[in-house]
Length: 102
Image (cartoon, rainbow, N blue to C red):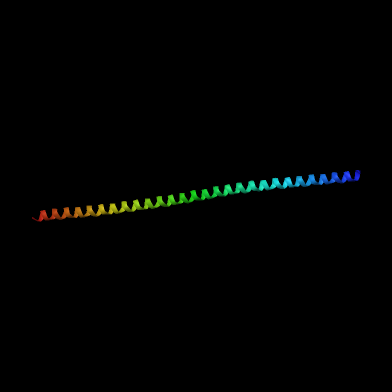
C-alpha cells in the first residue's frame, strides 16, 4: 500500500515538474513573442526614420537646385544689364562724337 502511494506521489511530483517546465516554456515563448513584436516595432521605426532621412535628402537636393537656378537667373540678368549699359554708353559716345563733328 505504501509502495503504491509512493509511486503515486512520485508520479504527481513528476507531473508537477513537467507542468512547471511547460509553464517555463510558455513564459519563454511569450517573452520571445514580445521581443519579436518589439523588433517589428523597431523595424517599423527604422523604416520611418529612413523615409524621413530620404525626404530630408530630397529637400536638400531640391533646395540646392533652387539656389543654383536662382543664381543662374541672377547672373543672366546681370549680364543682360551689363550688355544693355555697354550698348547705351556706346550709343551715347557715338552721338556725342557725331554732334562734335557737325
